[in-house]
Amino acid sequence: DEKEKEPSKGPLFSDENSKWLKPKTEKKKKAQLMSSDEEGDDDEDDEMDEEELEVERQSRLVDEEIRLEQEEAQEEMRRTIAQETSIYHLPTEEELDLEANRVVPPSEIRDRVESVLGVLADFKNRREEGRSRTEYTDLLVSDLSELYGYLPELMEYFLSMFGPNETLEFVDASDRPRPLVVRTNTLKTRRKDLASSLMKRGVSLDPLAPWSKVGLKIVESPVPVGATPEYLSGHYMLQSAASMCPVLALSPEPKEKILDMSAAPGGKTSYICQLMRNTGVVIANDLKAERQKATVANMHRLGVKNCITCKHDGRQLGVKYPNSFDRILLDAPCSGLGVISRDPSVKVQRTILDVQKCAHLQKELLLAAIDALNHKSKKSGGIMVYSTCSVSVFENEEVINYALQKRDIKLVDTGLDFGKPGFTRYQNKRFHPSVALTRRFYPHVHNMDGFYVAKIEKISDRKPEDTIEQPEGKDDDDDDEEEKTPVSKKKQERGKAGKKGKKKTARRALPDKAEEPAQKKAKKDHISVPPSAQQQGKTKKKRINAKVTMPRRRKVPVD
Image (tube, rainbow, N blue to C red; front, side):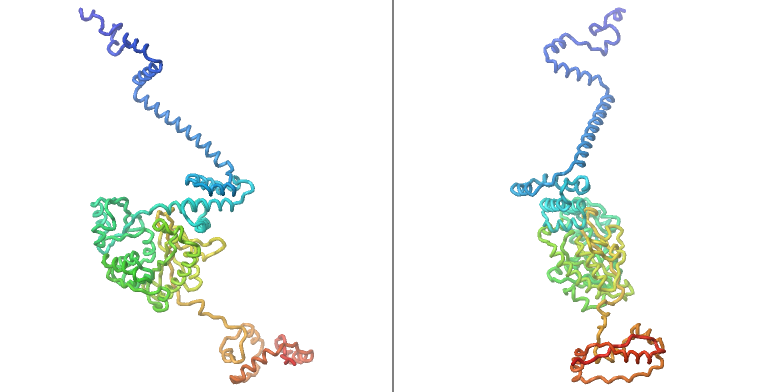
């Protein structure tokens, strides 16, 4: 009973709440008086935080984040509206001359490129009054050339093919390296076994794509991929994803005779042999013997047994071995405008003239390859693939269109379900509609090297040069040939009008060779004179019942 009557231990409290209520002591009051107001406020905030529940605190933080995001969104919207509706001031020649005397930072050039692209996207509303589109385009060419290190003529060529925005994406993607890809050699191993053995060595990898059953993409590797025991044993080959596409389009079959006109260093050749399962014959040709050393080494390492290497000028193969091969792969030498990420020197070493020279060589090689192709082959029917590692229209669509005019061929579907179709028009040029069956690959679209693939089927050996038109005028000494040639349509129509009763004229004897120059000279000296009225009357009387035709003019010698 005495314990119940005793007051609670907490000062100033006598009820049950004394367990959790803690009043301020005198010492705390003195400390608050001695401290500043700000510290007091902080203490109050701390006490409020202690009193705030965890759910309330999280809710308050979420609300604060939402409020900040809304403010940022409104600010960005105002900035975007101001940028898109404002008229961009194009630098004058004086301002550009001043920039030539100072080092312009890349960030400033990039901002100007983005501004010019925005103007070109809505040129009617955002252009500066009195300025033409050409001026904006010229500024864009110079800025992109300076920013990415290209020759201005190359950048202008890319703009004519892709357009402003896509050109920026293309040159930006060309500066980034492509993924490292290896191709499994199924002559020695399977992709599953190769992947497991590489993963044991710490290599991080993924399957290349659904369209490839042998490709592996290397994400990260602690060891050199080109020096592993698996590589030295010939279990895989370092090969880009784009260079596999021509072989897939060729689709070689076992026991065929196939020519690779430009084989070195042997990546595509070994893939062909792999798909043929070491049967048939593959001729690996290249112009330079030094490059073939790498081809021979790779064939031995990969275990290829059906390959023959040789050194010939590809332009002469059509004459040396006509109609000799079931399939042909022509990976033509090119300017390399699609593999700039691997060879940046192309930016400053290739000109449009160099590209056109490459196109001339490619046309010769393609015609020679078509002549060497056997269209009567029972296995393939005369199939060849033309490919380049360039994105240039000069080296791709123009070469194919030229071959369509010079040989009896047709384009067929490549069998690749990805890639962009080839151009059927470029500036004022128009190509054959079937050129759309070819395929283009871009680094900024497919994350592959720039590549072009066309699949061709040979129909016959006919050439346009074989059908030569006969000359209009013929000499008297060609009478024998005139009798052999078919009669023209007009003469056939005239002959139907009742010339059955005509007597056959005797064949005139050929003049001697000595008399030929004199007769030709006499022909030149003669002139045509209209017949007289009496002669016209006589001819009319003679041909009353016959078909009326114009009288022939009589040749009168000149005095």
